[in-house]
Image (tube, rainbow, N blue to C red; front, side, top):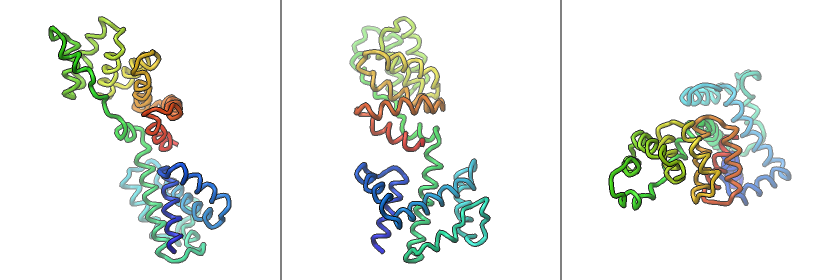
Length: 257
């Protein structure tokens, strides 16, 4: 029984996309050779798909209610609406406790997938305005101009004011890529993704030291704008770049599949 519980937990991590690369390879190898393990995987995957179909477009609260209802009517569900959950219990699993464990884990996968793959939720989970590294520049200004005030507002998380001040300062000199980068962050923080995209594109296509960082924020800007095709293309590029953003890019890609 311990082995079955271990298999269930391993498959849960695999279906969530949270297992290590070595564990992923182990699972995929077992799926090709172990019929029982493959059957367990298929049961869990079919159940998730069935639950997703019956509650598509509903709120997370409605999805939870659908999940409860599904488990209460094992013998009454119709084939066209929900998978035959009663047949799921008839595949020679050791005990009802095993089945109950699978049910709970499937529920967690179902809720996890339907709540985190929303672009807005993903954006909120991964976006954080870039740290202000220009305090020395700000403090060295002989007079308090728009640029100095922009960094002060940015540091105080007053992003709307920072965006306005950066826009005023940068309109006089668009060659200062660092300032454009922070202006893009300010725009993104207040939800103006299209404006942020234009600025991050300039920095990401330059030879600036912030080039890779700008690509990451550009991908997040596409995510915020719900341009998922461009977002995925850029995240795929970042995930293969082997830099500080690769792991996070790969994580988002898994959740967008």
